[in-house]
Length: 491
Ligand code: GDP
Image (cartoon, rainbow, N blue to C red):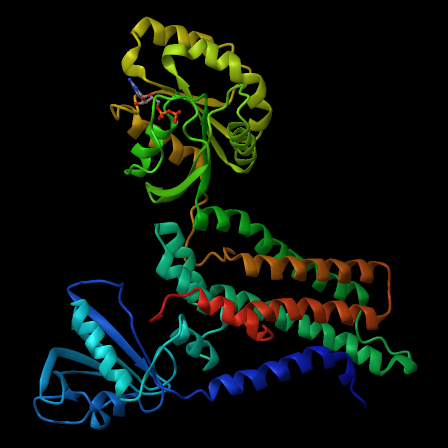
């Protein structure tokens, strides 16, 4: 029986080229070193080394009380001693020793825990470099872990996300991805697809003998089940993206309503410009803040009012674009001027608020009396949009702002994520999955139209290709470089 190897060729060839590239990169056996802890002074700092010979390099500058060499100690052990430059004592340190393949990178590795002075960190780094190590490139430790098969690419990317996680939800997602939840789902999908394609290939081999190995309705069922999983992953990005990048909240309203003041209160800093002159916030300011475990991305926008100033008009145009991207719209209204502000903006604004949470925030409540409040509440009974929240606050006096934060948390209503949920958070993964989804849709369509196995095989291969791209099996070098360059040095 002759196998249809040619139909596998493109995928096979790409994989082969990739493996060659991988081998070249893997042959880079140089010892790399970097400070792994955050830049600056701390109680302690950790300096990392990885690569064949890193233990010998460390031995050149390390003296233990018993004068035992690190090359002679057992792996996974920690040793106290001194870092010296000839006679000069630099620091007293603890050194962890790991042997390949049982380390983060899969190579022999060392971690030096020293005192956190910037001077000490730099001196030790310089000594390591003059003893034969070189400074690691950004993400090079994780890149080596990936190249040595310690993790696939999606797990390596999760390492960066884990470090950057700022809320319980982003932490949970990154942790799940790093522990391989997503990788397992991809492996299952690829196995199913390979099964699928082997049935088709077999049928093609015996095409002249009119044997049907692959029952079309069974194939269609398989394609449907694969499509379901890929579609679920693609759609999970909506939630994943919001969790990772923050729930977008547009703060809008007329100039001088107090938008920048509120933003400063929420962000706890003086980022937006606060002034009495109308139209000072001319550009869009964005920042994220963690409220009750949820990341919110606040977008302070230019005040909306009729104006002939071209720069301000541009800002107003961008305001409407931002409103369209937001999930929650926080409409700031100066409570001292509520009726006219509501009247003035409702028409322009409400068409942009469809399907979004609208929070009417009456600011400067410190300047109004109880009867005025009641009049405003009465006004709201005639408000055209019914599903709104409203609140009185004083941004300047920080009153009502805690309640507003609670309202925002409720409006975000994110699903509860567990570490077992597979949710896509990475744009690169989302793009690859979307392409895989398109390919599997073509397979489903082809099966329904009973097209020839050759064409089906082509689309199945494409689907496998895109899924393999996520795991890093067919990912080209440029993309790899790009991914790891975005890591910090020392990771
Ligand atoms: P924006 O144009 O909407 O960003 O408004 P700003 O935040 O720049 O505020 C305009 C003016 O209103 C500033 O002088 C603020 O100090 C003042 N302001 C903001 N919030 C309050 C508030 O709650 N009470 C009072 N009395 N003044 C406020």
